Length: 302
Image (cartoon, rainbow, N blue to C red; front, side, top):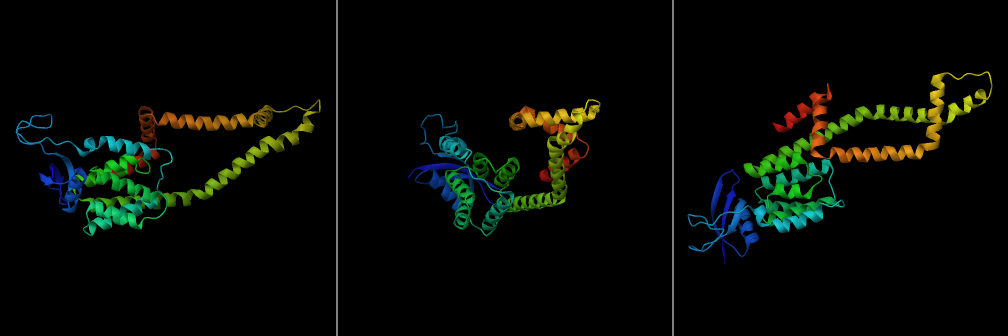
């Protein structure tokens, strides 16, 4: 049975290294997880005196990151899941998933066993797929944050960063509980904002619909007979209103297409990192909204 040289993190955050005998790399990872350790680097031990690119000067085998070892497999698996048909989770469901994982880890289960336990109880369409992806990648030796990052939505930068901090600190259950609390507070905040703005949004929608009906239907019908009179002069604001009504009545399809195209072009432009940086900097400079964004960022950081 081959030997594997490894480095790992314990639950207390201590670094350990050594040699483990296993059938393959995945078996070595499982053995370390059974001890309550998270593998950070692992490689096949080279025979003493054998020259090669993986042997260091002191005779010990060099360690390659697990992400690099399983790069081909991770890339192929991740490219499939990164498609648009990849199921996603809501903020509340994500908080529930993090809470269940944290509870299982807090009970003393290793990460792999915790994932399998939560997978047995998973329901819905997205959660089983996400947990299967986590189990596949973690069993192959990848850390949890790498699996979440490669999955894509709904794991944004904040969630991936928290998972990376959990892996690095060795306090996975505590960080996952904090992440679940943060997500739950985010859900409550969105509900409060939606409840506070629902009535103004309904009123604004009704006002906009009334304005469109007034401009395109009522005003032309009311002013049509008057404009046929020779001595009737239309004030310039009314002329502008009638011109706008005629334009919307004749080219409303073009207007709708232009609005949709503009929205898609804006979204594509904002997705460019340099452009997104400009937009975010402009948001931070705004009088009230910028201060709120800074406070939220500081709260998340701390």
